[in-house]
Image 1 (cartoon, protein in one colour):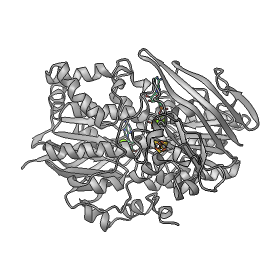
Image 2 (cartoon, rainbow over the protein chains, first blue to last red; image 1 turned 135 degrees about the horizontal axis):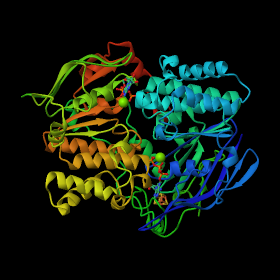
Image 3 (cartoon, each protein chain N blue to C red; image 1 turned 30 degrees about the vertical axis):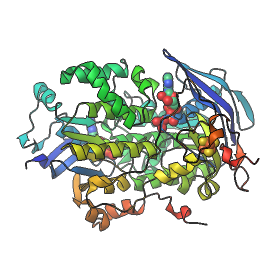
Length: 329
Length: 255
Ligand SMILES: Nc1ncnc2c1ncn2[C@@H]1O[C@H](COP(=O)(O)OP(=O)(O)OP(=O)(O)O)[C@@H](O)[C@H]1O
Ligand SMILES: Nc1ncnc2c1ncn2[C@@H]1O[C@H](COP(=O)(O)OP(=O)(O)OP(=O)(O)O)[C@@H](O)[C@H]1O
Ligand code: SF4
Ligand SMILES: [Mg+2]
Ligand SMILES: [Mg+2]
């Protein structure tokens, strides 16, 4: 199923004023593709996910935005716009696993519930077998015993995998995974990515992968979108964006990645890390010009006054970025 | 010099699970010590035991040479020099109070005027790229990575001599991750702080820790000086971890 999100804008109201968390964000995920959504912590990635799921906080308001999911149109400014798809058509792996788990039910009960919704006619024994199989697929040891345990009896990474198993079992048409593997070691992470890709290829679902791991994106995603301070600055296929980042922010973000074989100072306290210096803009008052101005290493006078449009990058169709340096005079 | 933390033969079972199955390790003062390992291998349990939040079935833990004492008074006394950053940042933030209230508590504990606490706080928030406005928000009004940074800021505000951080960089973008690590490195160079870092991020562990251990199923399977530990790992699991690292290098070199 293909997903397209248009002009999503979300405000959060606070005592100190209204914060614009998203401004006109558009995303496209083709059927059977995985889109990696990356960007600064606090840039609005989870807000995109919550808006699609219809699970935004009470103080949030979608001021603009439509979604086309599997050919059907949804007006996201209406509360519960996508409610009909939740659970059946869409599944989300939350950043915080405890948001998906009920502390008073065993793992088995919670997985069984997902299966009851997906396969209403199935008998208990089949459901138990399917649930245990799903736990084994996310590399949880001793699945039969896990079924009788409660969330608090599991480690952080074990809980995260239970939630992933739940999402896989629901066989959604759109899977949103918000940092699904942060609490896991890279061997388990690789296994989980294989399972997600397996599901994608089997049921042809679209996957939105929110992550800070650029390694994960370049290894497993088809396309990438980059968010910064509530705005989408670049999108394109992973290959095109990696070969030729169109936006300085994307380039600077990739430069911060720490390679596993980086040269190491013998005195560990002397090793330092690359960062993007400067401050984030105030979410209540967007400054004029380019949102990245002030942190950009190649800015020029116009950047402070002209808000860049979305310009094509290179000759790869669908690769675009919002930087004035791409505007052809 | 006495070790910051010395653990000998720590054992702890949860029913059928041996969460800690005879762990021994020593962490010299003023160094950074890394703990990596499988999910469910006992890393968080070990941290909780060191903090006195979890009693061992057997074994001994010494903090700065003194055996760990349980009980409320001891817990409070320890908080003045050993600070945790928990894996789940929400767990260290109380949902009903603004972040400002949380930070004010630090001033109260340290018997420091609030103005002084907030002056130090502003510096830490700036270094962690957090907008000053976060302190007027409630924990549910900030993003996952912002919550982690708030929990870290609070722990640093306590000026601990031992900081134990469980996955401190999880949920942070690579630039903010760099901000945090540079801040921790600065603190190390200017104060005699001992850092214990639990992390799945081997790329970072290699660069900040002097020594590290790899855990599996409640045991330390190998350990030592980080350069040789990750340079020539002996255990299959450690080698697998290094081999499975998702690297972006491949395409950067492509034309
Ligand atoms: N309920 C809320 N009320 C007010 N502000 C909020 C609320 N939820 C989120 N925000 C703010 O909106 C912005 C976007 O938050 P969001 O959680 O979408 O970020 P994110 O990109 O997922 O970040 P992270 O990578 O840290 O998880 C942040 O600045 C955050 O502080
Ligand atoms: N309260 C509890 N009751 C029962 N079992 C528990 C409890 N707490 C932890 N365990 C078990 O102890 C083992 C070690 O858990 P721990 O949380 O220490 O792992 P970890 O190494 O921190 O894993 P992760 O990387 O996933 O956070 C796990 O098998 C877990 O299921
Ligand atoms: S528009 Fe200017 S400030 Fe913005 S990214 Fe491009 S060069 Fe940098
Ligand atoms: Mg988030
Ligand atoms: Mg843990």
